[in-house]
Image (cartoon, rainbow, N blue to C red; front, top):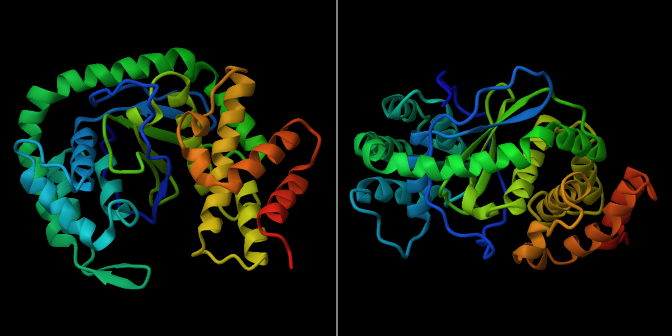
Length: 349
């Protein structure tokens, strides 16, 4: 796991927004701790990582998000504290100042110390919340759980995660830089030359994967391996979450995502409207599936088809899956494709 200390996050987390479980993949327990040595090569690339602290923390987050389930044995105090925070922040958005610290804390004690330094009150979108005491209580409960967790649960969970990482190492990582380069070229993103740590865990709160923007601009992601499922769906999920990292690294850089947001605002779509999020987010899925199909497997079954993601995305998925491949095939320019997408989804007056 990362060993240096993290200042408070600069930006909140981004979402995967694909929470339904994949019925094609078996449910797998978690596992965590070091996974892959950093690459010495330059350029934007992913690093697959595991960590016992990250695993335990997001397992608690997953338990807290399931309000109908009883906490696992010994987890009641931690889950109760997490649920108290959820009553203020919800189970997903707004957790950035807490979640990001777990990726860089040396241990649970350092995590508790970091939570004790959270601003009080915490201000989000103009509202004030008192979460510091519950955050310290959450970290303190996790600190007490760590020794037994690492002795009893962690070894088997790490084996399960290592199996997934081994699959990804063989079927995805050797060509993943080429895939990221194809995505950046397609989406009009200048190579930010960043390393994107991706922490794989066995469970998280919905939607199952998040990408965070740390102070200084470094992205970091956490991914529940059971959301993407086994095989190519997991690989597509890695690409999708990579697009969030690239989007953050290229914000206000004229990328396809920024162009869509600008065009939508010009049509009167506010930042609070669902379309402002759904339209660029659906393009992330479409680009990821096309990347899989064009670079890895021409017969790839898209994540959005294997789950109800595209059905839930509605017209955005239909329109973008029709128009964006025409750009990738060279029939349209990028700007033409983006304008046609917005024209179809938000027709001008």
